[in-house]
Length: 102
Image (cartoon, rainbow, N blue to C red; front, top):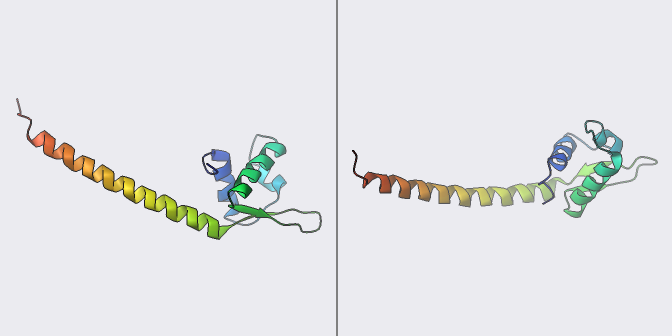
């Protein structure tokens, strides 16, 4: 669910290039900083990002280990679905061989 929203995916993509503040993360968006903060909270709750305090700055950091675990889960799910589609393709191909051509 954390990555279901396109804004959160863009935030994760931005953080993959390095840590950033909420203000920096909000720059490319046409939504409020408060909305960006809520997106960051969702990502924090999922364990995908963390925040630290550096004097007045509160940078947001990507949690690469959690993102890697999520990516591995997605890959496994994708492989299962691809196998199911290959099976369906084979069934459909076999069923069309038995249909008389006009």
